[in-house]
Image (cartoon, rainbow, N blue to C red):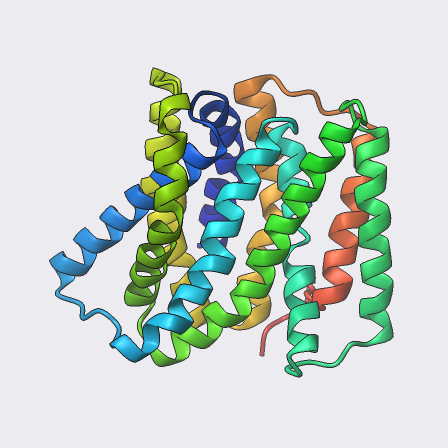
Length: 284
Protein backbone atom coordinates (compact mmCIF):
# COMPACT_ATOMS: atom_id res chain seq x y z
CA UNK A 1 0.00 0.00 0.00
CA UNK A 2 2.83 2.42 0.88
CA UNK A 3 4.57 1.85 -2.45
CA UNK A 4 1.30 2.31 -4.35
CA UNK A 5 0.55 5.57 -2.54
CA UNK A 6 4.09 6.84 -3.12
CA UNK A 7 4.14 5.94 -6.81
CA UNK A 8 0.72 7.52 -7.40
CA UNK A 9 1.43 10.71 -5.48
CA UNK A 10 4.84 10.96 -7.11
CA UNK A 11 3.09 10.81 -10.47
CA UNK A 12 0.69 13.57 -9.44
CA UNK A 13 3.52 16.12 -9.65
CA UNK A 14 4.08 15.17 -13.29
CA UNK A 15 0.36 15.43 -14.01
CA UNK A 16 0.29 18.89 -12.43
CA UNK A 17 3.10 19.98 -14.72
CA UNK A 18 0.96 18.94 -17.71
CA UNK A 19 -2.46 20.17 -16.55
CA UNK A 20 -1.66 23.50 -14.86
CA UNK A 21 -0.33 25.48 -17.86
CA UNK A 22 -3.59 24.79 -19.73
CA UNK A 23 -6.17 24.89 -16.95
CA UNK A 24 -4.52 27.28 -14.53
CA UNK A 25 -3.95 26.71 -10.79
CA UNK A 26 -7.51 27.52 -9.76
CA UNK A 27 -8.98 25.49 -12.61
CA UNK A 28 -6.90 22.45 -11.66
CA UNK A 29 -7.67 22.84 -7.96
CA UNK A 30 -11.41 23.26 -8.30
CA UNK A 31 -12.07 20.73 -11.07
CA UNK A 32 -9.79 18.18 -9.44
CA UNK A 33 -11.67 18.53 -6.17
CA UNK A 34 -15.07 18.29 -7.87
CA UNK A 35 -14.05 15.11 -9.70
CA UNK A 36 -12.79 13.56 -6.47
CA UNK A 37 -16.01 14.55 -4.71
CA UNK A 38 -18.07 12.89 -7.41
CA UNK A 39 -16.06 9.66 -7.24
CA UNK A 40 -16.27 9.47 -3.45
CA UNK A 41 -20.00 10.32 -3.45
CA UNK A 42 -20.65 7.48 -5.93
CA UNK A 43 -18.71 5.05 -3.74
CA UNK A 44 -20.65 6.27 -0.69
CA UNK A 45 -23.91 5.60 -2.55
CA UNK A 46 -22.77 2.20 -3.86
CA UNK A 47 -21.62 1.02 -0.43
CA UNK A 48 -24.59 2.63 1.35
CA UNK A 49 -22.31 4.39 3.78
CA UNK A 50 -23.83 7.10 5.94
CA UNK A 51 -22.57 10.65 5.73
CA UNK A 52 -21.12 12.11 8.93
CA UNK A 53 -23.61 13.83 11.28
CA UNK A 54 -24.09 17.57 10.97
CA UNK A 55 -22.13 18.19 14.17
CA UNK A 56 -18.99 16.66 12.61
CA UNK A 57 -18.94 18.81 9.47
CA UNK A 58 -17.11 21.87 10.86
CA UNK A 59 -14.16 19.70 11.93
CA UNK A 60 -14.17 17.83 8.62
CA UNK A 61 -14.38 21.12 6.71
CA UNK A 62 -11.24 22.23 8.57
CA UNK A 63 -9.55 18.99 7.50
CA UNK A 64 -10.57 19.75 3.92
CA UNK A 65 -9.19 23.28 4.14
CA UNK A 66 -5.78 22.14 5.35
CA UNK A 67 -5.30 18.93 3.39
CA UNK A 68 -7.22 19.72 0.18
CA UNK A 69 -7.85 23.41 -0.54
CA UNK A 70 -4.40 24.70 0.36
CA UNK A 71 -2.35 21.90 -1.29
CA UNK A 72 -4.64 21.77 -4.34
CA UNK A 73 -4.02 25.47 -5.01
CA UNK A 74 -0.38 25.80 -3.91
CA UNK A 75 1.05 22.72 -5.66
CA UNK A 76 -0.24 23.84 -9.10
CA UNK A 77 1.24 27.30 -8.49
CA UNK A 78 4.59 25.63 -7.83
CA UNK A 79 4.15 23.35 -10.85
CA UNK A 80 4.18 26.38 -13.15
CA UNK A 81 7.83 27.09 -12.31
CA UNK A 82 9.35 24.01 -10.64
CA UNK A 83 10.12 20.57 -12.11
CA UNK A 84 8.11 17.65 -10.74
CA UNK A 85 11.21 16.24 -9.03
CA UNK A 86 11.78 19.45 -7.10
CA UNK A 87 8.19 19.62 -5.90
CA UNK A 88 8.22 15.98 -4.82
CA UNK A 89 11.36 16.52 -2.74
CA UNK A 90 9.93 19.64 -1.09
CA UNK A 91 6.75 17.66 -0.38
CA UNK A 92 8.86 15.35 1.80
CA UNK A 93 8.87 18.09 4.45
CA UNK A 94 5.17 17.35 5.16
CA UNK A 95 5.95 14.82 7.93
CA UNK A 96 8.40 17.32 9.41
CA UNK A 97 5.65 19.94 9.70
CA UNK A 98 3.29 17.26 10.98
CA UNK A 99 5.59 16.45 13.89
CA UNK A 100 6.14 20.13 14.66
CA UNK A 101 2.38 20.63 14.59
CA UNK A 102 1.91 17.74 17.00
CA UNK A 103 4.45 19.34 19.32
CA UNK A 104 2.65 22.69 19.14
CA UNK A 105 -0.66 20.95 19.96
CA UNK A 106 0.94 19.19 22.92
CA UNK A 107 0.74 15.69 21.44
CA UNK A 108 4.53 15.19 21.34
CA UNK A 109 7.73 16.65 22.81
CA UNK A 110 10.40 18.37 20.72
CA UNK A 111 13.75 16.64 21.27
CA UNK A 112 17.22 17.88 20.27
CA UNK A 113 17.19 15.34 17.45
CA UNK A 114 14.14 17.03 15.97
CA UNK A 115 15.64 20.50 16.27
CA UNK A 116 18.69 19.28 14.34
CA UNK A 117 16.35 17.78 11.76
CA UNK A 118 14.56 21.10 11.27
CA UNK A 119 17.88 22.86 10.68
CA UNK A 120 19.01 20.19 8.19
CA UNK A 121 15.71 20.46 6.35
CA UNK A 122 16.11 24.20 5.83
CA UNK A 123 19.70 23.74 4.62
CA UNK A 124 18.59 20.95 2.29
CA UNK A 125 15.91 23.10 0.65
CA UNK A 126 18.42 25.92 0.13
CA UNK A 127 20.97 23.52 -1.40
CA UNK A 128 18.36 22.01 -3.67
CA UNK A 129 17.49 25.42 -5.04
CA UNK A 130 21.12 26.55 -5.35
CA UNK A 131 22.77 23.44 -6.82
CA UNK A 132 20.03 21.94 -8.99
CA UNK A 133 19.37 22.67 -12.68
CA UNK A 134 16.69 25.30 -11.96
CA UNK A 135 17.86 28.91 -12.23
CA UNK A 136 17.30 30.62 -8.89
CA UNK A 137 15.04 33.63 -9.32
CA UNK A 138 12.23 35.36 -7.48
CA UNK A 139 9.75 33.20 -9.39
CA UNK A 140 11.38 29.88 -8.51
CA UNK A 141 11.84 30.93 -4.88
CA UNK A 142 8.14 31.79 -4.65
CA UNK A 143 7.36 28.44 -6.27
CA UNK A 144 9.47 26.64 -3.68
CA UNK A 145 7.75 28.57 -0.89
CA UNK A 146 4.33 27.65 -2.31
CA UNK A 147 5.31 23.99 -2.48
CA UNK A 148 6.72 24.02 1.06
CA UNK A 149 3.63 25.78 2.40
CA UNK A 150 1.45 23.15 0.71
CA UNK A 151 3.48 20.42 2.41
CA UNK A 152 3.14 22.26 5.72
CA UNK A 153 -0.64 22.54 5.54
CA UNK A 154 -0.98 18.88 4.60
CA UNK A 155 1.46 17.76 7.31
CA UNK A 156 -0.39 19.69 9.99
CA UNK A 157 -3.74 18.69 8.54
CA UNK A 158 -2.74 15.03 8.75
CA UNK A 159 -2.96 15.34 12.54
CA UNK A 160 -6.63 16.21 12.22
CA UNK A 161 -7.12 13.52 9.57
CA UNK A 162 -5.86 10.96 12.08
CA UNK A 163 -8.21 12.32 14.73
CA UNK A 164 -11.16 12.20 12.33
CA UNK A 165 -10.58 8.52 11.56
CA UNK A 166 -10.93 7.73 15.26
CA UNK A 167 -14.54 8.89 15.21
CA UNK A 168 -15.63 8.04 11.65
CA UNK A 169 -14.94 5.57 8.87
CA UNK A 170 -12.35 6.66 6.32
CA UNK A 171 -14.74 6.93 3.37
CA UNK A 172 -17.22 9.38 4.96
CA UNK A 173 -14.31 11.51 6.19
CA UNK A 174 -12.79 11.63 2.70
CA UNK A 175 -16.13 12.40 1.03
CA UNK A 176 -17.16 15.09 3.51
CA UNK A 177 -13.76 16.80 3.40
CA UNK A 178 -13.93 16.94 -0.40
CA UNK A 179 -17.48 18.31 -0.37
CA UNK A 180 -16.40 21.11 1.96
CA UNK A 181 -13.28 21.82 -0.11
CA UNK A 182 -15.33 21.92 -3.32
CA UNK A 183 -17.62 24.54 -1.82
CA UNK A 184 -14.63 26.72 -0.89
CA UNK A 185 -13.06 26.36 -4.35
CA UNK A 186 -16.27 26.76 -6.36
CA UNK A 187 -16.32 30.55 -6.82
CA UNK A 188 -12.58 30.93 -7.62
CA UNK A 189 -12.90 28.10 -10.15
CA UNK A 190 -15.90 29.70 -11.85
CA UNK A 191 -14.06 33.04 -12.03
CA UNK A 192 -11.04 31.28 -13.56
CA UNK A 193 -13.25 29.59 -16.18
CA UNK A 194 -12.66 32.05 -19.06
CA UNK A 195 -8.89 31.53 -18.81
CA UNK A 196 -9.08 27.72 -18.96
CA UNK A 197 -7.69 26.21 -22.17
CA UNK A 198 -9.04 22.75 -22.95
CA UNK A 199 -6.36 20.36 -24.23
CA UNK A 200 -6.40 16.58 -24.46
CA UNK A 201 -3.27 16.18 -22.34
CA UNK A 202 -4.50 18.68 -19.76
CA UNK A 203 -7.93 17.09 -19.42
CA UNK A 204 -6.52 13.56 -19.26
CA UNK A 205 -4.11 14.63 -16.52
CA UNK A 206 -6.96 16.35 -14.67
CA UNK A 207 -9.15 13.24 -14.77
CA UNK A 208 -6.36 11.10 -13.30
CA UNK A 209 -5.61 13.74 -10.67
CA UNK A 210 -9.24 13.99 -9.64
CA UNK A 211 -10.32 10.37 -9.69
CA UNK A 212 -7.16 8.49 -8.70
CA UNK A 213 -4.55 10.64 -6.95
CA UNK A 214 -7.16 12.74 -5.13
CA UNK A 215 -10.35 10.76 -4.55
CA UNK A 216 -9.19 7.15 -4.31
CA UNK A 217 -5.72 7.78 -2.86
CA UNK A 218 -7.00 10.25 -0.27
CA UNK A 219 -9.45 7.60 0.88
CA UNK A 220 -6.64 5.02 0.90
CA UNK A 221 -4.41 7.29 2.99
CA UNK A 222 -7.19 7.73 5.55
CA UNK A 223 -7.65 3.97 5.73
CA UNK A 224 -3.92 3.60 6.26
CA UNK A 225 -3.96 6.14 9.08
CA UNK A 226 -6.81 4.24 10.69
CA UNK A 227 -5.17 0.82 10.50
CA UNK A 228 -1.40 1.17 10.94
CA UNK A 229 1.09 2.92 13.20
CA UNK A 230 1.86 6.58 12.56
CA UNK A 231 5.46 5.82 11.54
CA UNK A 232 4.24 3.40 8.87
CA UNK A 233 1.76 5.93 7.49
CA UNK A 234 4.51 8.55 7.37
CA UNK A 235 6.83 6.28 5.40
CA UNK A 236 4.99 6.96 2.13
CA UNK A 237 6.37 10.51 2.06
CA UNK A 238 9.94 9.21 2.02
CA UNK A 239 9.39 7.30 -1.21
CA UNK A 240 7.49 10.00 -3.12
CA UNK A 241 10.61 11.96 -4.26
CA UNK A 242 12.12 8.89 -5.90
CA UNK A 243 8.97 8.33 -7.95
CA UNK A 244 8.51 12.06 -8.59
CA UNK A 245 12.03 12.40 -9.99
CA UNK A 246 11.71 9.14 -11.96
CA UNK A 247 8.34 10.02 -13.51
CA UNK A 248 9.55 13.55 -14.29
CA UNK A 249 12.62 12.19 -16.00
CA UNK A 250 10.65 9.52 -17.89
CA UNK A 251 7.64 11.52 -19.11
CA UNK A 252 8.83 15.14 -19.15
CA UNK A 253 12.58 14.65 -19.74
CA UNK A 254 13.29 16.75 -16.65
CA UNK A 255 16.99 16.93 -15.79
CA UNK A 256 18.41 15.31 -12.70
CA UNK A 257 21.91 16.46 -11.86
CA UNK A 258 24.39 15.41 -9.21
CA UNK A 259 23.99 18.88 -7.72
CA UNK A 260 20.50 17.89 -6.54
CA UNK A 261 21.76 14.97 -4.45
CA UNK A 262 23.07 16.89 -1.41
CA UNK A 263 19.81 18.79 -1.01
CA UNK A 264 17.70 15.64 -1.50
CA UNK A 265 19.76 13.74 1.06
CA UNK A 266 19.53 16.51 3.65
CA UNK A 267 15.75 16.87 3.24
CA UNK A 268 15.28 13.11 3.64
CA UNK A 269 17.68 12.98 6.60
CA UNK A 270 15.85 15.89 8.23
CA UNK A 271 12.50 14.16 7.85
CA UNK A 272 13.87 10.93 9.31
CA UNK A 273 15.31 12.81 12.30
CA UNK A 274 12.16 14.79 13.00
CA UNK A 275 9.71 11.90 12.62
CA UNK A 276 11.97 9.26 14.16
CA UNK A 277 11.11 6.85 11.36
CA UNK A 278 13.65 4.05 10.95
CA UNK A 279 13.06 1.73 7.96
CA UNK A 280 15.45 -0.87 9.47
CA UNK A 281 13.71 -1.07 12.82
CA UNK A 282 11.43 -4.02 13.30
CA UNK A 283 7.90 -3.36 14.38
CA UNK A 284 6.84 -5.04 17.57
